[in-house]
Structures are given as C-alpha cells and as structure tokens.
Image 1 (cartoon, rainbow over the protein chains, first blue to last red):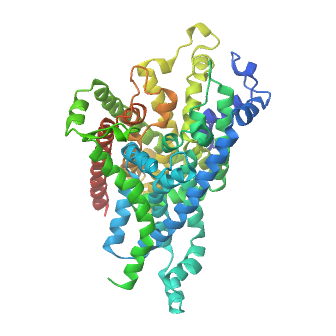
Image 2 (cartoon, one colour; image 1 turned 90 degrees about the vertical axis):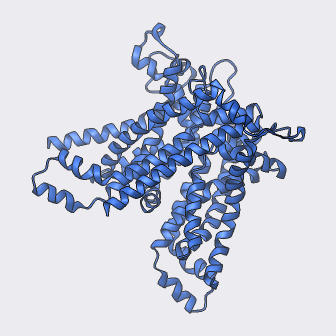
Length: 271
Length: 293
C-alpha cells in the first residue's frame, strides 16, 4: 500500500516535471499586461485574450501560421509519397544496393544542418526559389526523407510478402500490388510517418530562417524567434503565439501517443 | 540484374534524387568551398582558391577555439544528464498501471514542443524581471534579482537546462524500446533467487540496456552537435561568446558575414566531428550486440 502511494507520487512528479514549464507559459499567455508584470507572479490569470488578439492579428502571426501549414503540409505529402516507394523497394529487395541505400540515408540524416546550409542556399538562389514555398518544401523533403523511409521500411518489412505475391500472380503489376494491396495494409505506418515528418517540418527553424527572409513568408517558428520588441520583450504575445503553435502538436501527441512511440522506437531497435 | 531488381531501383530513384541534390551534393560542395574564399551573396565578385588557408585561419582564430570548447563542454554537460533523466522517464513509462497512457503523453510534451517555443519559454523563466527562477530564488526581493543569461557560465548552463528538458524524452523513447526487449523470465528467475529490486536493476536492466544506451548516445551526440535554435533565441551566442557553439558560429560566418569559404571550413569541422563520433559509437554498438548474442 505504502509502495503504491510512493509510486503514484513519483509518477505525479514525472508528469509535473514534463508539463509544468510549458503550462506556466500557457498561463502567461492568458494574463493581462498588469498580471504579467506583477510580483509575486499571478497564479490564476483572468483568461484575458488580449495577447492572442495582439499576436495573431496585429503582429501577423496568422499569416505565419498559414505559411507553416502550407509548407509543412505539402512537404509531408511529397515526402510520404516518394518515401513510401523507396521504403517498399528497400524492404522487399534483398540487394546490396537496397541495403547500401538504407545506410546512406542514415548517414544523410546525421549531417549537421550547417554542413549543407551554404550550398543549399546557393542552389535555391540559382533556381530563384529563395522566399518561395517550393524552395522550403524541397528542402524539407530532403530533410524528412531519411526518417520517412526508415519508419516505412520497418512497417513494410512486417507485412507478409505472400499477399502481394498473390496479387501479382493474379495479374497485378508491382506498382498495382503496392497501391492496391500493400499501401492500404500499411495505412497505420503511413499515418505515423506522416505525423512524425509533419511535426519535424512544423517545428523546423534553421532552414526556414535562411530560406524565408521576407517577413510575409516566414513560418511560425521564425516569427516566434524573431518577435519584434521595440523597448521591452512582448512576453505575453510571444507566449500566446507559442501556445497557438504548440497546442495542435500536443493534441496530436495525445491522440497518437502509441503510434509515435512505436514509430520512433521501431527504427531505432532494429537499426 | 533481374526485372524485379531493376524496378526496385526505379522505386528508389525519386527519393535518391532529392537526397542527392539537397543532402549529399551540398555537403560535398561545403568541403570544396572550404578551400576557397568567396562572398555568399556576391558570387560574381569571384571565388579565389586559397588551399588550406581557411583552416589555418581557423586554427589561429581564438573565437573558433572557444567555440569548439563551448561545443564540447555543452555535449559533455548535457548528454549524461539526458541519459540519466531519460532512463528515469523510461522506467516510469514502462510500468503498467492505470493512467499509463496519460503519463506517456505527458512525458512526450517536451519532445512535441517546437524548439523555438521551448527556447522562448526557458528564456522567459530565466528572465531578470518577470522570470519564475528569480521569484523562486528570491521571492519578492526584486533587488536581488539577477540576469542568468547575461553571465557566461550561467548562460551556458541555462541553454543546457533547456536542451536537457527538451530532449530527455527522446532518449527515454529509445531506452523504453530497449527495456521492452528484456525478457520477463530474467526478472522472474532473479526473484526466485531472492534478488532485491536494486540487484535486478544493477545486474539485469543496466547490462541488457547497453545497446539502447549506445544508440541513445549516438542520436543525442549527433543532435547535440546541431544545437542552434536554443542558442539563436536564448543568447545569440553571447555573452562574450560563452554559448557560441560551432553550428551557430558557422551560421554567423556564412550568413551574417557572408564568408562562405570560412563558414564552410567551420561546417566541415562540425561534419567531421559528427561522422567520427557516429562511426565510433556504431563500432561500439556492433561489439555490444555481438557480445549479447
């Protein structure tokens, strides 16, 4: 009995440690300017939405959100589509080349972003893709592909080969077998991969910073990092913008917690 | 090559093209550029081949030396803490009890938060006037409030705290996967032999977790070398370059000053460090897994 009580206390502490710092930021976003600067700090804010109005409307965070959604959404769709093709080939082909490709992707995933940044900027500059959605979408596709292929290859590897062989005996081509038999069965894997790369793109800051220098095209992380403050830091607005940027992710994490844990650890254990 | 194998290569082609253009080529180009002198935004002014000069300058650059030192101190300070905190989180997540789903979701919150948001959040907590830290330390005694982010040592520690809080859950996920591969029979056998909880942890859990630890170490080291967002938002590399990690220094040289040759030399150093450490860990991992079989 005493042991259970102690364990509950430990679990409670773990949950507080994980959630409290961000919860404090959410509380901050709901304060009035007077509550924000009060000492001792206000524990129960008056749920004033002024900071949200200021951040979203007056400081143009809504536009940044639309940019983030467009770029992360498009990049997720492309990454998962071409990642699924490669992952299927990698999982089903007992070739040296397939194995080598998998290892190569792992190596690319380990590249520090600063080591690719300069030449990448020059490529996008030469293409005229700086300050365009497609420039950042292309960059993100390259960034997310190794992760997507690794997760999807693990999922495809767990599906029995016999089902698609049966489909091919029935006259399907390989691509048809993939589209009609394998992909529907791998839907949970596709959803997990899509979720993880979407979160990666939604949160990405470094490349968004160097590719999108036009304030109208900035993504949410860049807007939050470069929040303009003339004399003092606008903490209330920053907290409101941060909450808006984060709550969808926390909701997704709550909803897909199992898939996330499985997706992130599956590749890790087998690799 | 059979038709099957040819079609496999075709399926890999689109992704291979993207990765080649946006991953492999830029890295090789960075290596080439590190032997040149050129201005990023003014390429028409010409590039001049300078041999190893950028690296020689780097060797004599006190800011670069400090940057390397800061990066190594940062890695050494954060990674063990991430593994220890991560192990604690993983052990809690691995227990079965009512409400485990909620605990697991709560543990994942720092992982799910955008790094930029995490950076602003901790910057606010460490703020000199309205920060929670000052209030917890000194109460309403405003005259004692201090500015941790304005002092070299405390600023680096603050960035390290933010990094540990943000990334320990990822280490926890890898360790959790490792925990789940340990067969229950081992614990049952130990219980029959009268082992205490600590003995089971020390002689079963820890040794069996070795591959997972090495993997977490690998991922965290590679990622720790990349730390950028936290530094950009919390300190801009200051005060007095105390948090000027290599990836931030390379960014400043390449994009703020436009010296792409010198910046590339910094980038190549980061790249070489990452690859060397990765190869070392992968070797250790192979030995650990071979030994377990």
